[in-house]
Image (cartoon, rainbow over all chains, first blue to last red; front, side):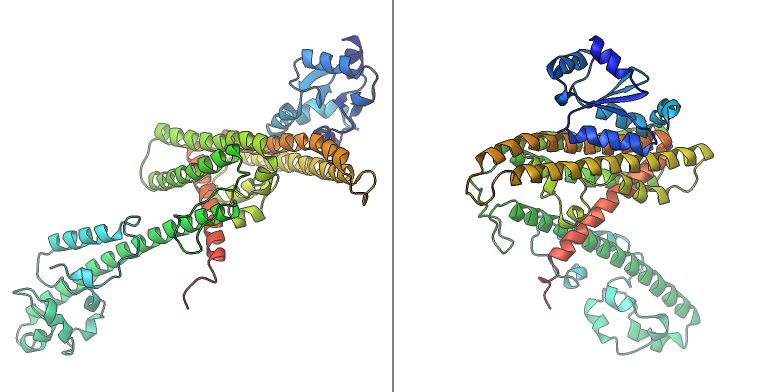
Length: 99
Length: 368
């Protein structure tokens, strides 16, 4: 979906979340801890929430949120982010986007 | 006549402990070791050498076999036969050594039995805490089930009991092979089995969390000391690293670097999940406290809170995923032998926690 593609490239690190989703919040905290200021899209506050959800699922996410994009590319959800971080492959990926 | 039968008290539940049978064997192998005669008085052989010539060891006579040089005979014959002295001294030393070995074996049997007893008591405690009625003695014939028993949880409890047994067996096996000789391929197999065993637990917990996430989060299926250290339904991944790392003597520079990175990223991931959990607690509390408190109505609040509880299941799964990944990364960084030693150390750490729980639970029940 165009809107999702546009939103996901707005910044180096973009996280699609929902205001009620605490796991999304955990992911956000992790990136902040790494020195990155991610762009958070709370899709439940977006009028097109349902379409965005569907688009995210179509891109391959098992759940719509949290969905993490780095450099415009979908990295995955919490599982993928955690695995990458523990295998030391997350930090190099976010290096260009440190503040 | 097996004289050793007079020297120990048989444990109460012979069916569970094996010492009685094994002490029969002890007596057998002991008899087969007799090359000279002076082997049948274990207690007295502990006496140090300079007391051998004491004539007051008259209890000796009741256990004598024909042709055995008794201790009280020594004074009569040693003054005239110095080589007899030497022979007798050697025999005594040999007998003393054998007695020490037997004593060591006996003590090891006691230790094993003690551990088994602790495990049984833990299982009883857990059953009690789960809401099963268990008699206040060791009698378990009156097990009852509460009506609100969740079959998913009942299944999990049973599976977990088996999981712990298998865990203990694996730990024993690791300990044995690491003290002996084992080739790398076989060791790798053992290590991979041990890893799979942990992963199996995470899978079990995931199903249980769907059945009753509060049960998994509370750690009621674990012993009390383990519960004390609980973090989102299990052990802290950073604690795992803390327990394991001192056991690796030689790490290459690359390994040191990798371990350092792992420690840091693990801690960061853990902190992130902890903060997420705190947010969940706040939102849940707000949810439950919403609207008018004191009017006696609560259905909408309870319903909206129910929806939030789904998130708790995700957190438990995420925490287990973190544990999974931490173990996986450690395995990647270490050599097979190091990983084996690490898994052994980790397993024993949990065994100690379980033993601590049991000791604490029974501290007032010890006879004075």
